[in-house]
Image (cartoon, rainbow, N blue to C red):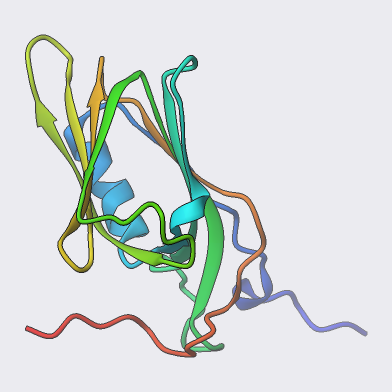
Length: 156
């Protein structure tokens, strides 16, 4: 005789979310908060008008955190319709730098255009001029135990 299946034993699905307005972007921003990534894992494909980051995202949505150690997952954050990229506080020549994402916001402009602002820890920022808001966040690996073994914290 086998035991009944339990909800806790189910595999949690990978995230695959899109944002076409500022409210949707707030959800993605919350889920991507405290993601870390090497500076070498960001790429702007000018011809395709696409900016992408390969993030090591903390799994804020993990309902099983009480049963296991805190987890991260590799995720792709993709912004489409990018016309221009600018950064502040980043030394692109230092290939060993690891960046930490604090938030993603949208600054509306005329019509549907505007700027997507990626705010980084340490006063860094990436500003993307976009034709319209079109952002996706997609998990691309299985979750793994966070190397620190801890949940990120923000002092008040």
